[in-house]
Image (cartoon, rainbow, N blue to C red; front, side, top):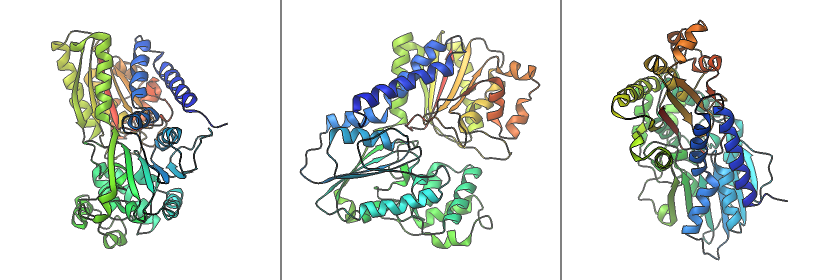
Length: 441
């Protein structure tokens, strides 16, 4: 029997609660932390978000309805749609294909964060799926973060695309820059999916994983007209001095994308249904309910830039707040940083951000900084992020660990692993960027 929507939502809620209880059980305020993080992550549950949208804006049509899910949250988003609407057919492309039974069509995996052979296969299957559409049909797309890598239909070789993506990630390029290049090197990105839909009406429900919620950038805007040009893409390649590092075919392979004035988009609606901003607002309201309105403050909704520098800035604001706010209190920030990799260590942007605050917070009493990726996977690791307290520096020193050496190696994972302060939730099934919580108890 397929899972019903009630069973799916209950199971997801229980798993989330148990996950955070396990993560925070070692800390003095563990029960409170588990409550806050569980409620915050449940607020961005993809299944619930899509269900809420459909309740507010019911889909009333006699057309054939097809569903196309793309991204890390594609399965629960598509499941929610299938619970409410009879689908003619559906295709889901995601990172983790669970063994649960779902009452909709095909689910295939892609590769992330570097596109691979599965991503290439996904692109082929996507075009095949779209080919059955007609102008009398409705295609509902359920888009979330990770879609850019999970599906590709490149106009260059897969090997060249992999080399470009890997080089950009190591160079500290922003997601806006990376996806701008992806759009100009892929048939399905930069609105490209629309031209394969045979004139079908398209509704895209989008879970944003980019700072500023730019529709063009989320999953490289597969159903969104693109305002960037080949000149913009070329400028990014030059900015990071990539000539000689990547194949010349990438420079010559850049293609123009579909623009906002293209008539193909007259029958397309793109709607953001969830985002990092909404998540921060919800977390703020949850903490306010517990401690009071003057006990919580969002200090930045768009953190960007080098993770280590951002971490130091947040830690300094946190230290300043210790003199102006009465305990207990919490500062919140959200967005997505980058890491310019110079060492051969292991980690992700949230762990890197956390590591940069260890010195800054050293010796402070009853403080805690938590940096966490909402998808449960921070960079190429099995950790979602890390926890820093005022005792982290002293504890590492007692173990003979030098913080600066771990920073130089970009080895935050092994630093926090030794302290037992990695956050491991397993993949959460959602993705709305990163969250930073600064608690003073």
